[in-house]
Length: 196
Image 1 (cartoon, rainbow, N blue to C red):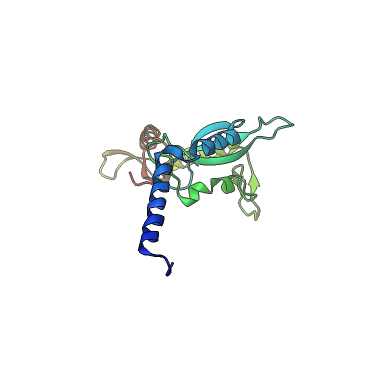
Image 2: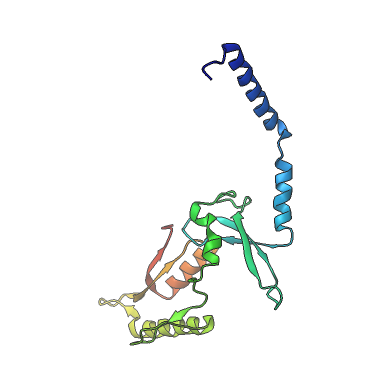
């Protein structure tokens, strides 16, 4: 570099600018790379979903192979940001980009867990059993602690012993319905992850 003359430096610089300009004009192998990507995912099934990590609610595309039959176990093989999603426009944070590891983690819980009073171990239970147990416990608590009238005789209809914390990865409509349902039960302690 020290032995390069000014004229040689200008030639090298000009050639570099011309080469990069040609690449920007469309003479780069972008089409071939896109075809390779399509080929990789050609046999897979695309599923749109929402990233579970934070309250932003980024859209993701999950690609899976297999149909769940004995000879082809269903498995997610690739995850990327959804370019058509209005929140993230195809981008993902580092945690969202590593969702494939989250899905295939050996320590991932696949069913609700229950620990009986006095027990030291957690045991899996079905979703139906878990939801029925939650509903029964909520009804028992509401029946025991519901306040219809205040001390001065005003109708208040409140349930102050139970609260609800909701995630924000759902749509506005789901959030509205959840809020209305909990308020109709008289629940006062209600919060959302995104504070909206």
